[in-house]
Image (cartoon, rainbow, N blue to C red):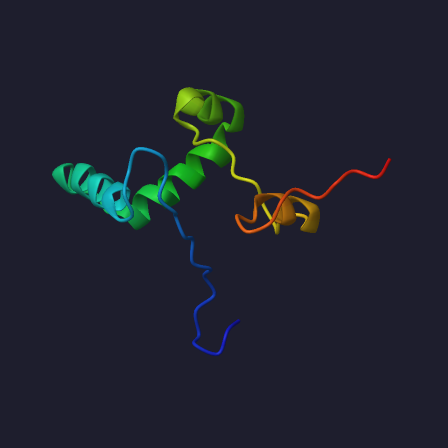
Length: 93
């Protein structure tokens, strides 16, 4: 347990294509508020639905998945090629 006494871990949602930062959360919060629901309990309900029927729940999401983003740092060779002040490194012959 952490020193703050909380056993929970925060979940961060980053902006996705089609939404500016904050717009997605505001849109979701608005939709849930109209139904007298909260974001935190919605997320818990989604986790519960996933555990109850993983294939069915994930299948229902289908087209709603955002594109995967590359993780980690780019390789040094990739960084050298993308730096605007440098030419691409020459391949050895």
